[in-house]
Picture 1: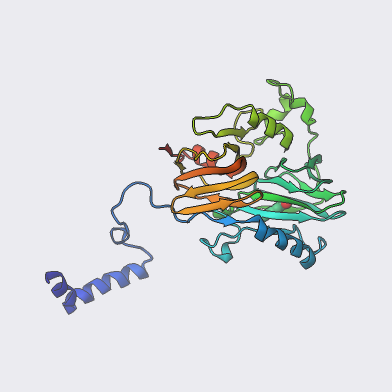
Picture 2 (picture 1 turned 120 degrees about the vertical axis):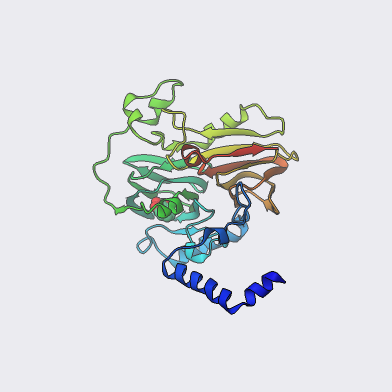
Length: 344
Ligand code: 1HN
């Protein structure tokens, strides 16, 4: 009653309005009216989202009919999370961009470079290659190809079938930091790089390679990742995990993209965890379900789904187990001292 009487007092109302008009005109906000008093991490801002391959694959074929490579810098369908709106089309999840790219036989995506880190995980096709600072990286199913920030990169295709790959970039983060730079080719002034065979002896790296802030290996072939994952002992929940690292530092492969390969055993839910980092998952093999806060995603091979920050996550693989590739901003969060992780 007292409160209502106060509200109805013309003098009080005029006073409040005066204050609110005045602060609005001064471009300031009264924080005590905004803050809800709850400490600790705020609820995660977006639900997990899922792009099934059965929906995207036909659209990739249609994209080929829509545009030729003469008119497209890259023939990419960018995964625009509806939580961020279609105008924010680079956000698959808050800090990460993901997309699918298709190249047809004889086509070429011309060289360029940009301040964003980028990587590709090859989905299908043979005969395509990404040329990174002059180094040719063949693209085969499951291969991880890096195109680090400010390296020249182009995609070429001398094979006979369509080639499709998953793209992941740190575009939204770089945009938010207002640090986007782009330069069209032709590629020029790139360094002479060691062959990947210079890195294949465990414990030995060429000294010149220590000078880059990214992995000097631009290609992580699937057969090697698959065999390495098979050799990792299972954790109690049946999962196995590998991190793709820069062999010269043991750190992330790229400054702002940190990648993992997760192996899941059939029918065993993984221990629930949450992290302040974000991930985009690409299903390399198998099918299964993931419980991500209130959302349950049923995924199959080649599907893409997100793990938004601070969401409780548990994965369960179907009959034959599964392998999931994860592109994350985890090492960015760690270096900013914002990485928090919990396990149940
Ligand atoms: C880019 O340069 C590529 O080089 C793919 O293949 C996707 C999305 C946003 C900005 C640049 C590529 C991209 C991109």
